[in-house]
Length: 217
DNA sequence: TTGTGTTTTACGACCTC
DNA sequence: GAGGTCGTAAAACACAA
Image 1 (cartoon, rainbow, N blue to C red):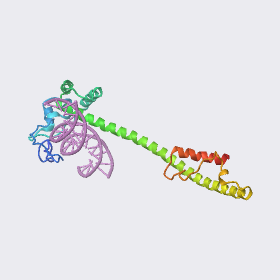
Image 2: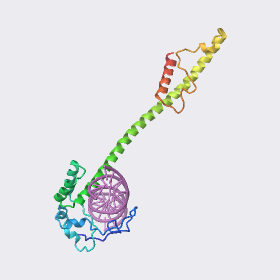
Image 3: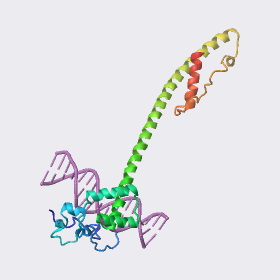
Image 4: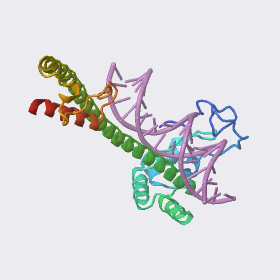
């Protein structure tokens, strides 16, 4: 099939012109890991044709080779058992799979990273769901607060009207003081009874009490 | 076929124990 | 110092146009 192409651009494996944001240490000319596989008959090679793919390649080959499905499956099972890799286990896996121990280590590193990303996505979804739920509750309470505020304003108006009427009647008759007229059980309406910015449960409770008092008498 | 987005492999830099 | 994470390059792959 394809012969080994030269690298598209200076890469981290070949050198100092890397686009890495951090300055790189002087690099050695490294033999990429794909060459480690060439001499060993891994399942990967058995499926893809092995060395044939690299015929005619005289440059250090930077071509990456995906692990075979059965290799990945084996590594996945091993990862499920334990996602960290002790040296003995690394060596054993490498031997069983016909890979370099470093390839196994890198596979585990990348697998942990993928696992972490997945977990973060899950956590995000769950937090977002909770947030949406709380916001819906908040909106509902805010709406109820608005409605109660409106009711309160109109009741306040009615109450004051009623008091004015009584005051007129009483002062025309017995001359009783205004303060004697108000029921001692009546909720006290003060200036900050229902501040515009507050939607607390206690205010809702007080509004309901006032409502009851006005309706029941 | 080709352009484009995603996944996988591999590495360097840095951190922690 | 060994082995971890993090960020990234680049190959491999998937897929629509």
